[in-house]
Image 1 (cartoon, rainbow, N blue to C red):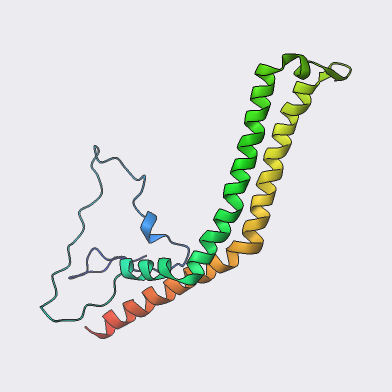
Image 2 (cartoon, rainbow, N blue to C red; image 1 turned 90 degrees about the vertical axis):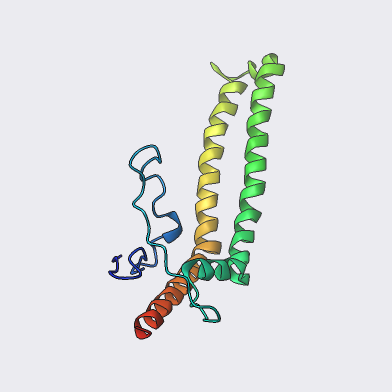
Length: 167
């Protein structure tokens, strides 16, 4: 990313599609500290002039697109049921440990009881859910999300070219 000189001194040029412009500056310091550097405010355009779309306009356009909505709905269709199932399983384990100590203390094999097996099942289900999430993301969302990122990158690059040509 390069900073420009002149009237657009606060503008950031995107050279990398993986660079997240919306997240830049997050967590880089508290407002109580020195804080971020002040940004240059662009001069207002004359009345009736058509302004070029900015980065916020591009991101809003992508957010409203059908492709973005599909990626978000795929994410929600996996995450919401997965979270509900996992939290239900965890609450059932805790409630059973409190409400049914006789059941949880029942031996399964030697010194291994139901509570230990269920506790190990919690770890196993965590790893299983993590694997399932990574697989779902890789097969159903990553390519579409990368295509969206490249779309934004292309729009930002075209916008930068039109700004450069207009000077």
